Length: 238
Image 1 (cartoon, rainbow, N blue to C red):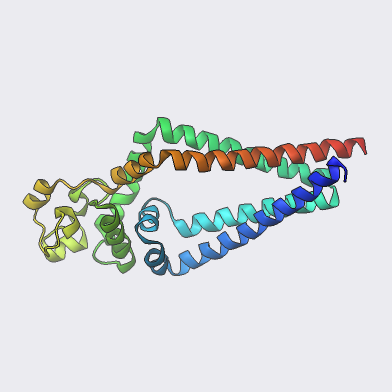
Image 2: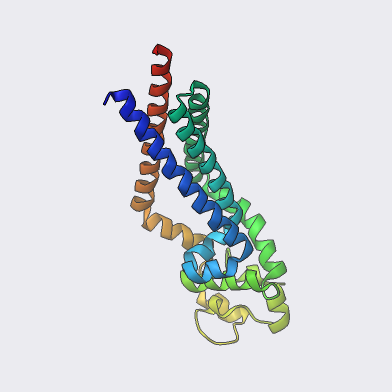
C-alpha cells in the first residue's frame, strides 16, 4: 500500500469518526435545548455551572453542525479525491484552529474583561428570574450546591430577585448553612465566594488536564490539515 493510499484511508476513517461525533453532539444539543433540567440532573454541578455562562444546547448544536460538515467534507473529499473539497476542508479547519488560539489568548490575557461581560449578562437574569423560573432556579441551585458558591459575584446578585422579594432572604447557599433564612448580616459574615471565581479556581486546579486536552485537539487538527494538504498536493501530480 502506497503512502498516498494509506493516508487517504486514514483520512476517510478519521473524518467518519468526526462525522459520527458531530451527530452525537447535535443530538445532545437538541436534547439539552428541549429538556435542560434532566441534563443538569444527570451531569451535575459542572453542567449547571456551564449553563450559566453559555447556552449549552445551542453551543452543542453549533459544534455538532460544524463537526458534521467537517467530517463530511474530509471523508468525501478524500474518498472522491476532490481537490476543491479538500481545500475547503483545510480552510475551515485552519480558521477554527486560528479562532481557538485567539480565544485561548483572550481567555488568558483578558480574564477580567470576560468576567465583566458575563457579569452584565448573567446577573440581570438572576435578578429577574431566580425564584420565579423553575429551570433558572434549579440550575443555579445545582451550581451553588456543587461549587459551594453564591451567585455570580456574591449574595448581592439576588437583591431584588423574585426569591428575595418573596422571602426577604437570600438563598441558604449564601450563608453556607441549611437554614431556611439567610439575612444580609449572615451572608456578609459567611462571605461565600461567587460562582465565577469558584469556577476559575476549579479550572486553575485542573489546568494540566485542560491544557492536555486542548493540546491533544490542536495536534489532531494540525495532523488533519497536514494530511489534507498532502493529499491535495499529490493530486496535483496525478
